[in-house]
Length: 496
Image (cartoon, rainbow, N blue to C red; front, side, top):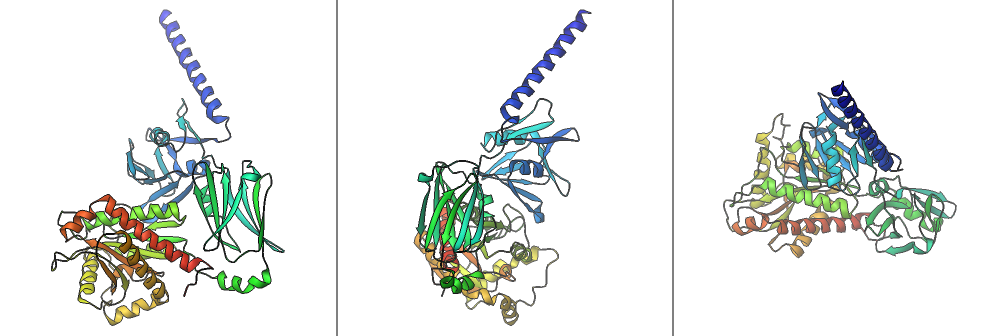
């Protein structure tokens, strides 16, 4: 009887403690407007949460890459990447190991519930905790107060409406105009859902929007198709509104000219080589595939952060991607620019150094032909290889005709990349060249291939092994993309 009473009391204590914990968690999270619950699933005796459900509850955008079964969660502060059947999660540039791999059933990803919750807490992405019954994960959703944008036509102009869930002081809101046709709205205390804002459906006269958040205030910038005569800024309960007044008759021609203007909203970055194809090997044993992947990821991160443009990688880890599939990925993503990053090597001239940018055309110099031959050699490693046998000389010219409408843009981008590399990278400017690279064949967009330096040169190989040197290369290519984007998007800058 005594033993029964002790066990009974112990069970009651456990019950009351569990009830108290559940009450505290509900009080702290469940009753808050931003507290959300995600169901825990038991699979083979282990606890998981469904990532799509979790992301939906958090109002977090997701991207799925079918070619490598990968999901990206776009939290406002940090990009998080998970891969099917892999026990590692990448948050920004850091990798974390889970106690067991991510599962994928063909439509949903399942991730270790407790471990993933802990990661969200450690990385300050979200406050997340499993309840004592292990049946739900309770987490805080991102605290946005600026959500999305819509543009409406008015009789004497247009209205930009920014949906909000906070009250801002009218006297603290500020509108300014900057070069290139940008209208900037500064909002002290504003916390924008950057992806929600950028992905809002836009119409005349707004052609693009970007965000910048300092933590204390934010700035929403709108690229306008044409100049406005005047504006009025006001607030309602749910919106900040900017009324733009224009003379429609004076701007009718500009509207027609700008309606079909090419917009650079997706950039495809191709890190050369990868997986079983290491590319060339430097004198210090540094692999080309390592250099190109690092620069590609640095560039993509900078583009997403400072340009607000979607980035698609042909690879963002050490995997082998066939040449033909790289441009297929670019075309299917509706890419507007394709940049393939490589490192050079030549056994003939050990002191050769410098950077050069290539266009897709038959090689006109011995050096260009040598580089193209080396980069194209990866085809020997591919399975189910498309027939590239005809892509030489005259037939390559025919293959490039489909891309000829972008040749002017490709030439301009290549020249600007070289100019910016010259400003930031202490090496030799080898100029813009032409060669028959198979990785560029079929890219229905402006496309270039950048050779960032020579791994066969001891000093340049040592430089390419340094993060600070690769950062300069990244910044130069990024600066070139900004210049290129302004030229071909802005209604103010002459595109001729």
